[in-house]
Image (cartoon, rainbow, N blue to C red):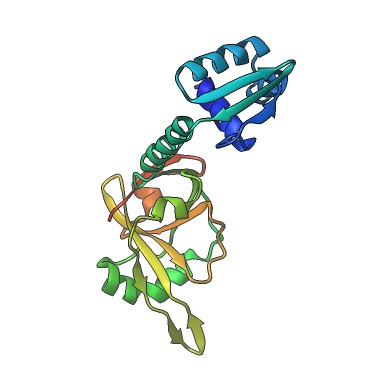
Length: 211
């Protein structure tokens, strides 16, 4: 793991494709290890062909080789795949108290476009994994619930992403004019999720995105 971290540090320092001047002490501080550990890691990485190193007097120059850069690229691709599993892990939080009103307004369209009668309220989840709700939904195709005007008030379009929570079908809804930060997932379902799953604020929850 530390050799990967060191390769990332060197890449951030501009060592991909050119030799940059480094100090072992600075690298050690970046990794939170001893200078001796850094020297060992550099020797190992040099043997593996991930870096080139040359020493001129007391100055060390290091270049990340094409093999080293390729390793980081493959690692990045694998991490992206691992994070794009369509799974959200979060914790239940209290909402703003407006969910029930908006669900009632959109209820006929939710029935039409999502195929279920929504419980008049939403479950709010603070996303812990991945970084934001948008990262979790980037590969999912939304159902667009169109906006409408009612009694002189305009209600905007809503993007709905089908999800499953403990075998209960529902949807993450993202209004075009949302007030929620990107760490909050707002979920509608045909049941009161808090009651059905016996959830309280702070409880962990796993959400599967259904494509």
